[in-house]
Every structure is written in C-alpha cells, then in structure tokens.
Length: 220
Image 1 (tube, rainbow, N blue to C red):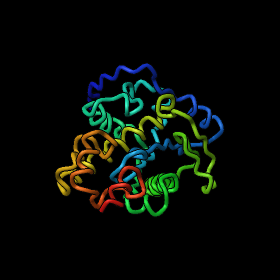
Image 2 (image 1 turned 45 degrees about the vertical axis):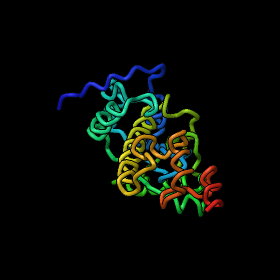
Image 3 (image 1 turned 90 degrees about the vertical axis):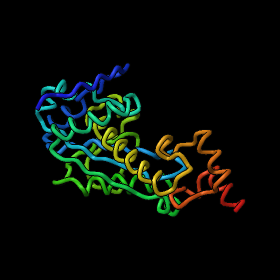
C-alpha cells in the first residue's frame, strides 16, 4: 500500500520518545489516548485509544505528517486516519453524548469516553500515554502529557481518530437538526452557532449545562 501524501506543515513533530522509554521497561501494548469536542456547546465528547505497531517505534517516519489534529486540514486528517489504521495494532473509540455530559460534567464525561475507548481495543493496554487527563481510577501505568498530541506520536494518532470520528457525527447531527450549522462549526461556540441558538433555541444534541446554551434554555 502506497502512503498517501498528508502534507502537514507543523512547528512540532510528534516523536516516539515516551513509547520507547515504556518499551525499554517491558511494556508492549502502549496506548495513546486523546479526546475531541471537550469545549463544544453541542454534540458528544469523543475519545480514541491507539496502540501503534512496534515497527513505528523503530521507524516513526512511517507516520510522517501525523501530528496534533488541530494542525491538520480536514483532508489531511481523513488521509491520516487510513494510514494510522494501517500501522496500528489496535484502535478503540469512546463516545459520550451531550445528555451524559450534562449529567456527569465534562471532565468525568471525558474520562468515561477515554475508558470506553480503552475497552474497545482488541486487546488490553498495559501502559497509557494521555493528553492532559489522568485516568486515576484505572490500575494501569500511565503518563499525562500536557500538549501530548504535539509531542507524542501515539497521542497524536489518537487525536486524529477522535477528531475525524466526531466531525462525522456532527455532519450527521447537521442532517438531523438543520439550521444550526453543525457541519460547519462542529458544535463549537462560533458567532454562527450563537445566532442559531438565539433564533432556534437548543436542540437535543446541545449541552444544556454549558453557557450560553443554558441561558437559552432559561429563556425557553
């Protein structure tokens, strides 16, 4: 299979330093975890867990161009997903919808999505590399890395999977709830989204505990 041209220009290139250190300690199912949609007004929070094949640790250029999903275009991310899956020993995705985010709070909901992603892997993780969040309830060795998607290749790969998965869900939400512009802004707090909220009020995929959605709920 010929590698697609991803063509990312990024100030940071994720490396496999953390993965190699864990492999030296004897870990094999080293799993990168990241989420997408944590700060949105609408839609789910989506997490992904990715175990890269060990050959990527020896030749990280196999995934050249995979970086923090926010630094990639939509086309680059779509191409990247196919290539990540080509070089992944396992991929898991966890999705927590808006009503559970309202019930639990965004941080517990994010941890839940990450845990679901881990459970969706084809085999158990034995070490975790997580972007910013700590999964302290899980008895698995783990490191929480600030801006991990920019410095750790496993986390970067998870960020791309999570982002593309969530964007596709928001395209579906746009079909189910026209008028809000979900396909364009993906539930983030843009001016267009604010105008739609003012005109239409919240819909079923809005997070009603988030401002300014909560203000419009009160108005209703």
